[in-house]
Image (cartoon, rainbow, N blue to C red; front, side, top):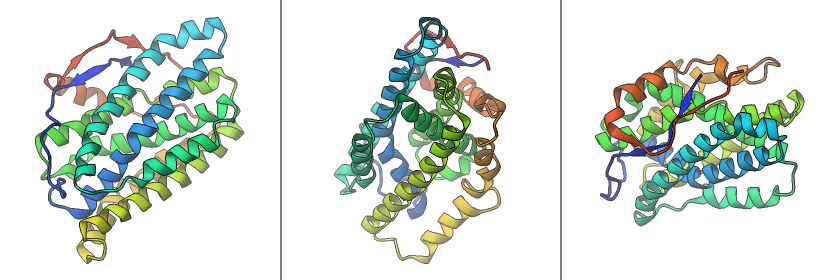
Amino acid sequence: MTELTVRRLLIDLTTPFAVRWNGNDAFRSAFFNALSMSFPQGEQYFIDSVRAGLKVLPATEQERLGREVQGFIGQEATHRRIHGLFNGHLQTMGFTNGIERRAVKRIADNAHRDVRVHVAATAATEHMTAIFADWMLQHPEALAGSEDRLKTLWLWHSAEESEHRSTAFDIYLALGGSQEWRVRVFRYVTFIFLKDVTLQTISNLWHDGSLFNWSTWVSGARMLMAKDGMFRGNYPQWKAYMAPDFHPRQQDDALSRQWLLDHSDQFVPVGATVQASPF
């Protein structure tokens, strides 16, 4: 059982930060900026998809999952707002948010699709963000040299992504979504995610003037493709999603729970605590 609590983060995001805010590392800063640029539009899509999925469920299922969805929506709305503030500083520094523009068009082009497709896309993305979040909690050195407030921002977001990792998946199951479509959408989402983040990271590095520096790509290879890197090290967890009997709660969220416990002075609960449904 997992408690979904809507939290107000107690950090200052009104003060600007440096272009290379992540330990003066060009790649790490550009990569995390790319992720942040994707969040406000992405979080809104997740909210809309899960809410729409819940709405068409039978009344008994709405009652069973409704409070969990409420907590999910509250957390995602908070993420959207906080990263909107973070992205506002990037905009003032001249960064162009192409990943958001592409997402807006893609969502509009696919708005006609069955609600199960949208919930499947949300569940797929939530799985990837959850495993990346767990990686972040295991590797806080990915934020080495950052201001404490920015470390808190990213690790808090990671902890909550891990915490609500199963909500969209449970809605998809309740909608009667098939294994075939779950895997098909997951592969598509993986491709789109990697493509979008790569393009945005390159754009950010171009703006920073470090795109063609050898040290930039050494840092990127170390963080993403090392044996325990964010991408290579998470391959088994990524692949696990395609198993017929997979459920997100099969993957450990102990680091998330521990981080939230150890850093409870960094946030204030603003909503009722709700229980996530068991599987």
